[in-house]
Image 1: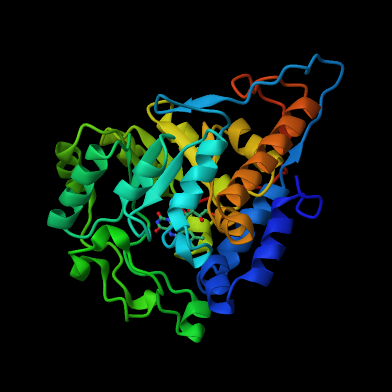
Image 2 (image 1 turned 90 degrees about the vertical axis):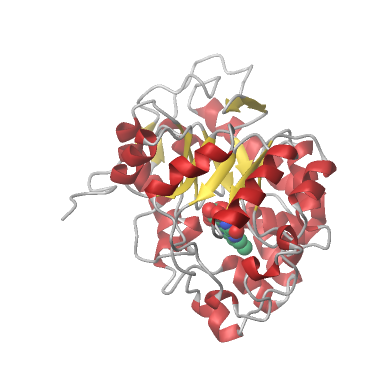
Length: 360
Ligand SMILES: Cc1cc2nc3c(=O)[nH]c(=O)nc-3n(C[C@H](O)[C@H](O)[C@H](O)COP(=O)(O)O)c2cc1C
């Protein structure tokens, strides 16, 4: 461990010094006032741990499985487009870092290396994150994912229109690198010269299309970006195997609840019919513990993977994951628990008024 890079926040500060200003902003920014991005943190910070002592915590087990794939800890790599913004080896470095930490990476549709190149770089478990780009392109992407060994399709649903990140608008940010999966079908990727906030969202995709998507492949389906129990219920009624509770790190619509605030009611609505994961704002092992206590099977990190990449490529991603591993183990031990499969009630204190409240 580098003594100057002790926490994820140290990686964040170092990455900010390294990256070009507009790349940094693209990675860091939330939508509009960036309120949701901040709330992802403040809501987690509002949940206090309740340490328990005089228990034998010598042997800790944080390994788990996600849709049957074993991972060494309940922390995964969230799908994010454009890893070359932070390192020339892009997604190849990220997947190698994830493999070194024996965890799963969700490879994004908007990657700078193709899904086949990412698959060839390692054998660590991989899901393919899908942005629907019309039936023909989506079918091609799903078939390629199946062929190259991805074990689930993670459909991102929370982008009906492009996100409006004002920092990108001010910077006139244009994606500097190719979207490799679209080589030969550039029209589907959106015009490279078009500023990112004008590129296509995923309009035209509805619940009715999910059955069609399922008919393309036997791979399990995870919906990413579900924010309400109403949509979570619809998702399980449509037979999805997983739900990634996420607000895209606050990068899409602003002024929503944090992911962690929506987690308990989604867990209740799903009632064990699908696995539940969470991302948005995870920066500490204690955040991982809080999400697991509230019902997630595992969490994922987005921005921190870019911080690791910017600082030290594959090794930086590995180090970021190892910091979270160490911190999760510390948090578990202080709470007197030896296994992530044994998280009973009473481990966190939820203040009055915290959470989703009444819906009008
Ligand atoms: C630079 C960047 C690009 C992203 N691109 C995608 C994407 O292409 N598809 C997607 O589903 N989510 C994307 N995300 C969102 C992440 O999957 C994840 O939901 C989010 O980053 C989690 O919040 P965190 O950054 O606070 O960890 C992106 C995130 C970042 C930071």
